[in-house]
Length: 268
Image (cartoon, rainbow, N blue to C red; front, side, top):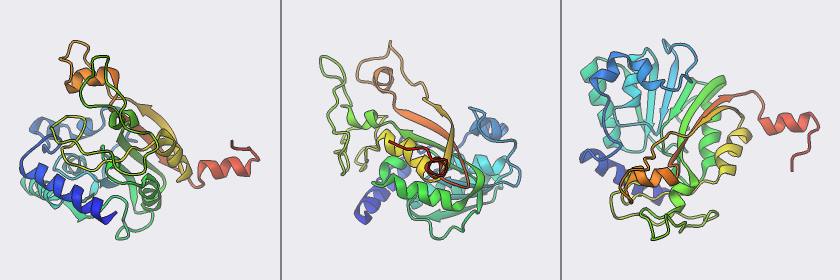
């Protein structure tokens, strides 16, 4: 596990230093209406004034500064010091306050129980082998009734070849593999060059949330496909393989499976 963390830390530090994809900071037009910029789906309850927000694995100067500009008290946790430096720089430039912590998303002992009203997480769970550890940690630090808004890479996105074969995009990686999928050495928009990534099954993505004490309130699949795009490009591939899924969840007092058992419902 530590080897994976060190490897992905170096990958993201390098991406941040070179300004590669998914490392951009928030723009002036986004700061003009920060709540609108971060709440495109309308999933955030009410406003953010004085809410305690954890941006988990969300360094880079994009999400955390916008949440702070919208009035939230923000803590951002990220494994990459270089990505966190971008948060610090943007916060200084905009006169914002936020706390940065260099740590892995699945190891949060420095955060107190029930200390956040909202946890937001961009696409990142693919970089750790155990999704259950991530969900359990979030459940611990999020108050009952708090929201967890997240995005994940869909399993098929990591299983399928990056470029098409003559008959389409072939599934080349197993669904039940326990180790990371082979890293890609080219630059592809759906993968980060050299990073170690893990396929998380739907059972883990959705069922794992329920088992950790969340109720799922909504699910969205961002549209990135374009049938007219050049074959082999991200837009063309996304027409056949949806790359991401967004999940709106809420922390409840008792895990959903526990509620079912208490009601005498037999789970298969």
